[in-house]
Image (cartoon, rainbow, N blue to C red):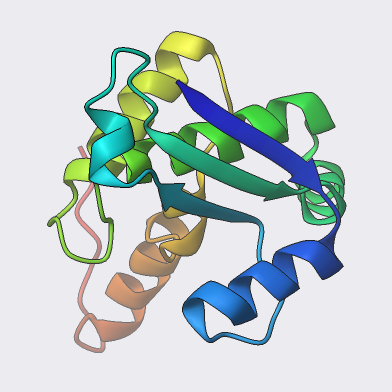
Length: 139
């Protein structure tokens, strides 16, 4: 079982400051249950806190519903409760999040949004880095 709190940014900022030492609002926080609660028959995985304010802003910016954004944030938080850590797991969490989002028909997740977009930038960089006078190969 996972408890999900959807609240405002000031509450997420207070939680972030209290538990992570970061005095800023954030979109989602995960709080794993103590080991004893995870071993009970109810199997509580923990709590996820989501900022409705940030979810609303992100949904508007990305062009999807607030409900979908809350689902994306909840999925991200639940994966953290399952033990994944995108900062240390060499892409394992990102792969799982991507797979689950496709199954749930959800837009790009947090990890993908944080990664630089390489497509157009790479193509421009390749053209810029090509030797002067070199011709582009075509099929």
